[in-house]
Image 1 (spheres, each protein chain N blue to C red):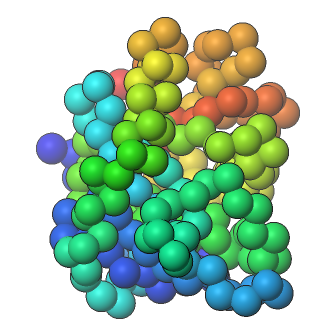
Image 2: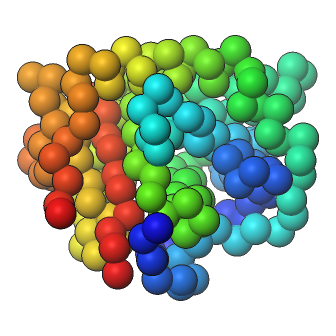
Length: 149
Length: 50
């Protein structure tokens, strides 16, 4: 997916990435974390703003920096890098709010033709079931796995 | 291990900072993982392509 994206700083483990969003409200440091779940090879993806006073991540903030496409493309770029390094992993992601989950869904829907050659994408329906991602459905979470080439 | 195609779709990594790994131990991330585990315990996994 060759969309405009921000450069990132990566952690030693490749599980954490930091980048700076630049938009109408200025510069906002953002953190992406891939962390282990209780299921082997299944990682939870978290995206949040870095609180510059505490250094902690905060995903309750609404930045409204006008660059959500570029931010999502940056998250997707780390997904490519992470699954390049760890090809057997699955990634689970849930938005911190319904509107943010909806934003993720729109981002996936808009680029589905670019994503599906590389990833299988599933949505967790409001009936608490997994299904192959469908742009017309509503989801509360997502799960992706890199396809074999 | 699966083989995946190497391309330019990945992140533009300008630097490596070992301090970033401290986020893996943060309470925020632990809470998010606990939430994910809760969903995955009840939902299980989707059926993947073979």
